[in-house]
Figure 1 (cartoon, rainbow, N blue to C red):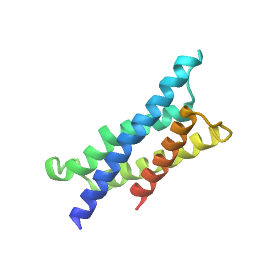
Figure 2: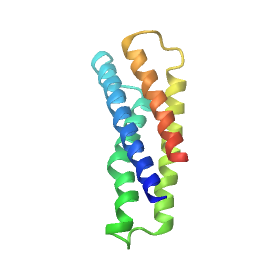
Figure 3: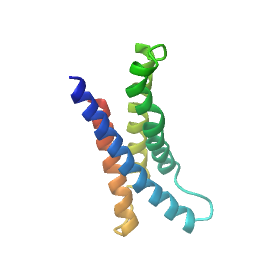
Length: 126
């Protein structure tokens, strides 16, 4: 059972890296062309990728083994629940904000980021 969970955490990390790359490209593209900034929902999905890679996954994977005092069951549950809610709200809000987006390269990138974000949520929610 422990191996299956580690495999799911690895898939979760891989999906977060892919989503980070896609959404960072989109945010950079928007910021280069629009003076006032980028979409808040895109920035939130960018935050989710960083949160998952650098805070949630290391805490969930390494704290039970190396820092057992920090690995309280409610702390682990809270981080996991926050991560699930973050991903769900991020990919839904970005999908709504870009619902009438056209057919271009960057449009395909943001659609792929939404799809990977949804799949990331599904993997975490399992």
